[in-house]
Amino acid sequence: MHEQQGHTASQAYLASVESRLQADGCGTQWEDWSGVPVLVGRRADFKMRWMATRLHLFAVATAVPEITVPAIETFTDQVIQYAKRTKGGLPVGLQTGVAAFPLMVSDRVDPAAMAWAEAQQRLKFACMARPVVVDTTHGYVGMYRGKPALGRVYASYFIEKGALYFDGNFQGR
Image 1 (cartoon, rainbow, N blue to C red):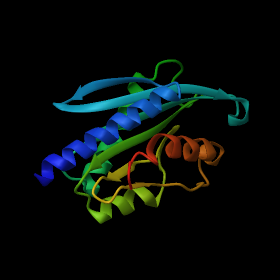
Image 2: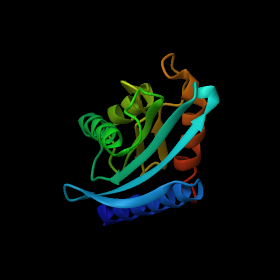
Image 3: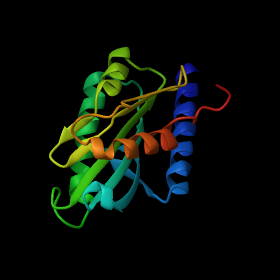
Image 4: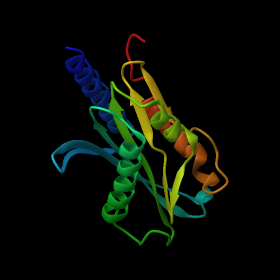
């Protein structure tokens, strides 16, 4: 019974994220990643204060039975590769960048995985990721919320979008 409740809580959370992404102007779709349903939300923004850069934002979310450090780390790498491959436009680094929120939600979360997500922004060339770990059992959303030295110009954008899309999705908690 507990596993069914956890699955239901995860699905409700993902539905809430999907509607928040859509409300913010993101295109959303469900994809099959090797048999796993994955929600993909995306948008592109251009700002002069970003040194005239177009930033492609991806939020990629999935429900899993358990979240461990290797699971969120692998998923983060997969999301970055997916975003680079599908963003379109100029190559990454030529006045264009990728911002990604790889999100895993579960009722079983290794505390080390939560700590990993909250520790820092993950960087690859012209790609920034802020992994999100959601514990439905405790109604807790873990992600890095700071302003790193590299990519600092985008930090406020990341913080704003992360709060908008992922916080407050637990009703009654």
